[in-house]
Length: 432
Image (cartoon, rainbow, N blue to C red; front, top):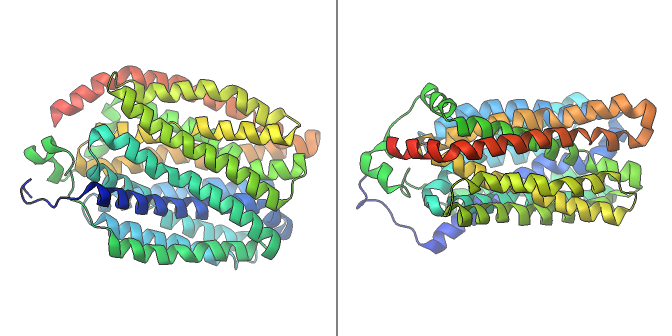
């Protein structure tokens, strides 16, 4: 399709599409994280251990989520991404509702696998669509706005989940928060248009690279040849180890150590995580685009600064005995740990051509989620169980300390990625 024949979209419509896709990501995290706020009720009724909870909310979910994300993203790079996102949303929402019918650990685990299968088709095609609607100089901001869905979803899931759990039980909570996503999928299908691949990259359109097919092997080989991508993917993984490892057990921590009830936890933790994460996510993309005009290394330096600023709030959130201080500092922790995502997705997309973006996002999320979502909750849960005979209900407090190690590793990797990014970006632009 020539530039003259391409459809044009107003800024208002582009904003609408971004809003709708952000809503999809909101449902993604409502349905993914709802189990976090319900864990204590589920653990009590089904007689589960922290390791089982970590396995269910982490590794098992992540394995299906990230491995199926690869072939779905490969298909998305060749076909209609809007339809894939709509179908995926309907599937994971239905499986969330079905989770409320589980009678034992195995049935609940299988339902959560179904959620992971559905969510595999959500983000990579959405990332690709956004990068087609928005040009490179606005891409990190747009992708950060999309990533706000994480924290809007956490805010809604925690606050509504905590209230529904306390008033009606965890089963009703899962059903009530799962069903609306099916209706939203229809709205997406009816009102959002599939953009032309590469339409915001004039050079790619002119040379025809936006329409070229690339094999899976070619995309993997290209990404592995970019030192920046390898380093930032590992950095994202170690960053999210703390995000999910601590985040998925912070509600039980507040219940066991600080004696909070589920409704209070849902409201307090939802506000702290949701608002903090939204501010950090948007700030990360906005500041990266702003300072990236001066030096492209700021796309990754911004994550380094956030890691340093996060150390003290995380320590206070874990070790303070004052619940107000805990929630306030957890708000700051959520803010600083959310900064990295939008810029890192933008950097990944800037290193490849338009036909590789969905698959590139899926590969980034494969690494990110296997380390973070897969090993974070399972690792923290196992450490908590191991320490429980010695520390009792406070075992989670000391298990959380491992996040300082993974955060330090992430900081170093982000710094090294920033050093290599200018040269890798130059080579990528020359290849286009």
